Image (tube, rainbow, N blue to C red; front, side):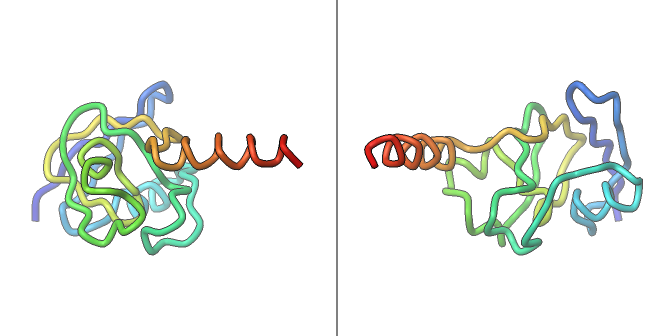
Length: 108
């Protein structure tokens, strides 16, 4: 088992996360208020942009392959290196969908 340092941009929070645990599990254990909902890699509530480092997240079904290189779903992601994450950042697919939903609502 290997431990990695996970630092969160703009919060001053840093935790140690084993490669056997998800980042969300470690956040909750450390008392860090990480947003989440489904815990199965589908809702994107726990999304974070990967600023530095890498994760493995084979069950992160809500991300495209390209998005999975730049974003982590903390409920699924396990560190493969030390990380710097920017929480609350969402992949382009959800940002585009939200913009489309807002435009459709304006048309009503």
